[in-house]
Length: 188
Image 1: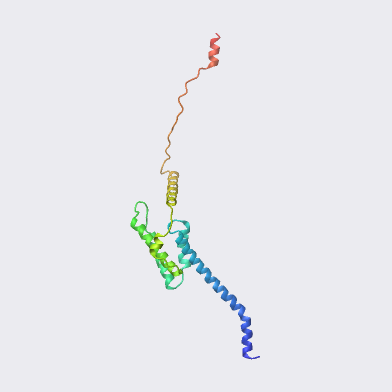
Image 2 (image 1 turned 45 degrees about the vertical axis):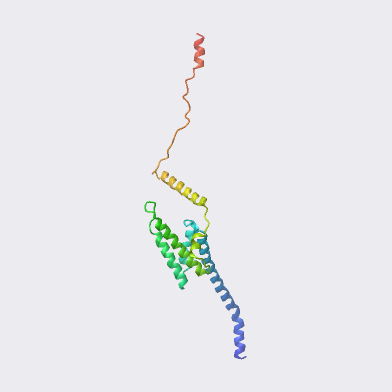
């Protein structure tokens, strides 16, 4: 047996092992790419409803799914950090700022723009910002649910009271004569 025969036997024995390893490597890579696409799809689908649970979960997955060392993923993480930093600025009704709200929208658009480019979706920023459908009824429903939730919480915490009004009181009942007494008195 010569060297070429030995190498042939070694190649035949190692081929299935190498094949399985390459297959697993490709599967892990596909899984990582699919998870990145899922984050992007979720953020694009919920960009008009930025307080939805799915939107928040997808934002929080950015650091995990886009953790690579390449420039594209670094830019995505930097955009996410800028957006996250804007969330740490309080925006209660007392200090609500229209400028802050617009800044947050622009930061989200920048994030989605860079994420899309990295993943092979080349949308311009205007398209990302304006080309989404959000029915007015959904916004009104969210506002109603928020008002009900806040009102009920305020009531249960004793900060507000439940106003009560009495309507349609029955008319005063006039006293009915005691017929048994009348009959007994009539017989005397």
